[in-house]
Length: 257
Image (cartoon, rainbow, N blue to C red; front, top):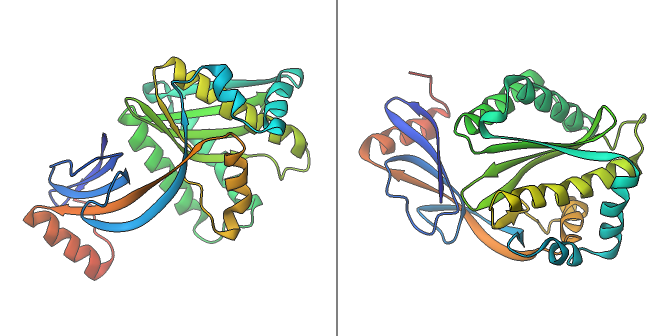
């Protein structure tokens, strides 16, 4: 179980708890992510895929589909390399570079609209919170000096959970084929890096069955992970937390202390 203290408002702690088996027993407004069973109010049931990092590298790669294995091998011939920053290694410049890249990726999908600056700041603040807690990772795949793909992760004691992914595949100056190779290679390289760190579980961060995410899920499934369902939930603990939650429900937001 990983507890992230996100902020404190009006004397109430807002916490995020990852992979809990049961209530964490802390006060405040608590969002459970990836809980083994519903805790408090169930928000949604999530389908994901899990890769067991206790397997050998050969076993992990062997579970991948044939074309996936080919593209992972091809990366070396294309001169693609991987880089990693974890926890306190992540600088302000790293965060800003990722957020800018991610927003360009978002716009390339036609999904960035009004409030772009606010969205950029939201991502930046969120990543800074995780990085300050030492539980965030940013990885990237490069070809020469150009970054083709970014991945980010929530990092616990024995797990990593894929959080965001962004690529250059809609950039007309970059080959979509090379970006696809770089993306598969980076996932494999990430898994090996986290395995060396002693992590046991690689969570693909969701694998939905809706039509609009079908291609993303098929990409993740090509790595041969095992299906798992868990829950996102909310628990309100303590009279002050209940009062603040009531205000949030009433007005939709709170001012900072």
